Every structure is written in C-alpha cells, then in structure tokens.
Image 1 (cartoon, rainbow, N blue to C red):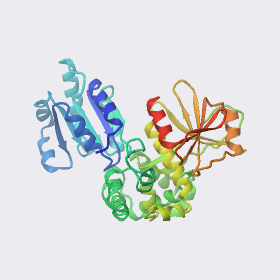
Image 2 (cartoon, helix red, strand yellow):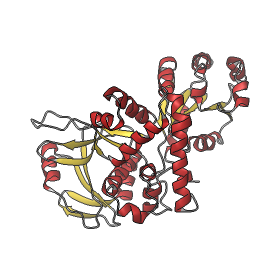
Image 3 (cartoon, helix red, strand yellow):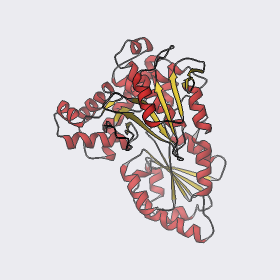
Image 4 (cartoon, rainbow, N blue to C red):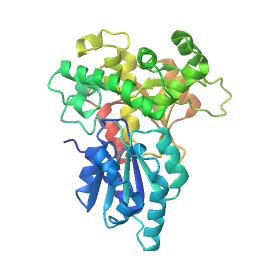
Amino acid sequence: MFERRLFSQLADALDHSPATVLLGPRQVGKTTLALAVGEARASLYLDLESEQDRAKLAQPELYLADHQDKLVILDEVHRAPGLFPVLRGLIDKGRRAGRNNGQYLLLGSASLDLLKQSGETLAGRVAYLELAPLNVLETQSLAMDTLWLRGGFPQSLLATSVARSLRWRQDFIRTYLERDIPQFGPRIAAETLRRFWGMLAHHQGGMLNTAQFARNLGVDVKTAASYLDLLVDLLLVRKLQPWHANLGKRLVKAPKVYVRDSGLVHALLNIPDKETLLSHPVVGQSWECFVIENLLSCASDQVQGYYYRTSGGAEIDLLLAWPDGKLWAIEIKRSLTPKLERGFHSACADLNPARKFVVYPGTERYRMAADIEAIPLTMLAAELQSS
C-alpha cells in the first residue's frame, strides 16, 4: 500500500472538525484511506451503494445516535442526500455534549449535489479535503515514466502488465460515462460525452475555446460549457486559470484546460505504451500537464496555481502564488538539456518572481543562471510539500 500524503491531514481534520468531507474521483483510494485512518480509532463503515447498509439508515437519526461514540464513515454519501439535515442535528447535539471533533467522515465522488448540500446544511461544521491520484512522492518506488504512462489511479498503476493497465483505464472511462456521470448531472448521451472527453485529451493543455468544442460536437456553447463544468466538478478535468495583474500588459485571459490524470489521457487517445507515447503529438503537452498536476498535488492548499501569458509572447507554464504574495515561476521542459526561450525571461521581468525553476526529466539539480535552477520533478515536489 502506498503512503498517502493526505493521511496526516485527514487525521488532523478529524481531530478538529465534527464532520470531514473527503472528495475525489472513483477508484482513487478514498475508501482505503478512510479505513486506514479509522483503524486508529473506534469507527463504523457504511457503504451507501450497498442496499444492506442503506437499509440500516431507514431511521438515520436513531441508528446514528446509537453510534455517537464512534467515527462513522459514510461512503458515496451522495446516495443519501437526506442525511445532511440529520447529521447537522446530531453534530449540534454532540457539540452541546462537549464533542467537537471526528464524528463523521463523508466520502463522495465530488458531486455538485454533495458540495451544495453539505455547504448549505453543515456550514461551520465541516472540513473539506481532496484526494488526487497518486503523485511522484507517493510512488517513489516506481519509475516516474510508469506513473506518467499509466496515471495515478492505484489499480491502473499496479496492473500486472501495460495491456491490463490500459484495459482498466478504458473500462474506468466507460463505467464513468454509462453509470457514474448520469448520477451527478442531467442525462447526457455517453457517446457524446466520450467524444468530448477525447477532444479534451487531444487538446491537452491548450487554451479553452468552448465555441470550437461546441461546433465539433454539434451542440450549442452553453451545452458544451455544461459538459466541461461537470467534468471539472468531478475532479477529472482542470481549468488552470491565467494570472491577472495590473501590469499594463495585454494578458491572455482564457484558462488552459486538461484532463488531470495522464493515464486517462493516454487511454482516451489509445496510447498503449511508452514508445507509442513518445512518438505521439501529445507527448509534450502530456508531460507538461503531468508535471503541473503533480506539483499542485504536492503543494499546500493555500498555494494557488496559474499560468501567465501575454499577447507579446511572454509566458510561464506554471506560476505558484503563495499566501504571503510571493511568486514561483516554473518552466517545464521534456529534455535532458533544457533551454529557456525569451518568453520566460520576459515574463519573469514582468512579475519579478521570488524563485525560478525549470523542471526537466533528469536526476540532477543545477543552476542554469544565477537565479534559475534546473530541477527534477521529484525534488521540486518534495520542496513544495515541505514548504
């Protein structure tokens, strides 16, 4: 079993909050992590996709009141939306009795309904955590290229062969399209959404052009935007926002958009192995988005990620904004001898970042200039995690 970075954060959240919501895509490891945390304390696990466990909650207030001395883990809690008002009453009752921590751990596949209802009825009583696919620090026993090719879903990463890994990811995509996504939004034809997801993979790391997606799908812009919003809210796709500042520059304002897990990108594009990937046109953007997603996964929740681009060509692949206002500029290169273009230097002159890095697939850290370091992904991820 991999040691998940979120383990200590989840334990701390349970120690200080009556309810904690752990969100993430299906099969990312939420249940495994929750049960691992639950082993250290008296706990009760209920899977709300099980009819037997749902039957126990026919009278939820009575059943949960009998287990007030335990951490109650409710998996796939979106299956029982009527629970939230009950949980609010039980949490408030527990507070009056002097219990202000770890009563409920709610697991969900990032549904909009889950976020909305917990926000409305558990305001001030709930902490939120997001479990992303495995990152480079959690999988250091494996080659980084394996993580890049197969992605961070545990069953894909640990498959016995490349072919089995690809088949798992293809089945995962099909299951999401046909069974899971219809639970979270309006009915969408699976084939239409599959085409849209595939377009995003081909467009990996590109500027969002909703109108172009809509034309390619044969739908209106509003419908295409709703498809994208659904995949973003399910934590399957990320919109990387542009950095905005009053610099007297003409800044690009459209977000970049990409499928967050590199393994799903390769499955959507039917890329079975590393050799095929290295010869595919998406290889550069796949590597760039893989690096960005890993760095954001390892950084503190208080660190915000952006990209920077002006109409004049100044560009930074990833700009990290820290709570104290400092900026880190990160350029990403898929080369063992990385070289910087003029656009990166121009962007740094505009923003004056505190630190400048070039992430590359090598193993050594060295200075490219007095204030610019070339650094392997694992080293920068470790520095972000410890900062």
